[in-house]
Image (cartoon, rainbow, N blue to C red; front, side, top):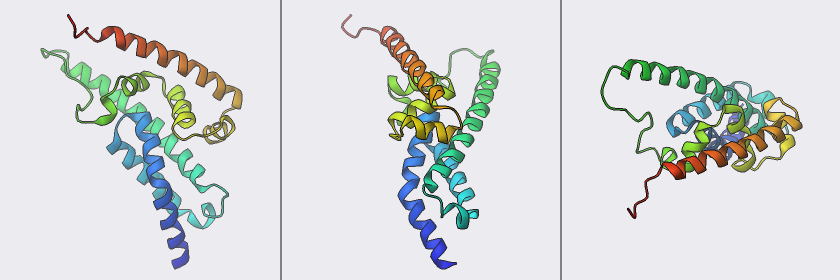
Length: 174
């Protein structure tokens, strides 16, 4: 039993940072990403005797984290919509992003967060996790063709979002 926990501890140390980074890139919130990663690893721990024998136990954790991320994204959108409704009677607009959050500080991260979750998910897995199309298809439970289509759509939309953000930034030379 002790060796099992040692194996899990090594696995956790080796993979935790990558899982947090992927989720943070999808949600734009490092604290929430850490919570989701911890939940995914906690679920893995309860099943470690089986999952520890998998060829790629990290893929199982990543898949759980992706599902939790999608659920969190839905909750976040509902909460944001409610916040907008509640703030509608007040003067001044409030930024829904914490300005101290480094994920919200760049045009790229803001544009990434504007993508629909399925597109954001494949983009992050492809470019940040460096997964192949077939691995993303397996992790997400979709076909490789769907992954390719979502990647193409995500790249196009991301490019449009970045061009729009460039037009929205006032020219400092004026």
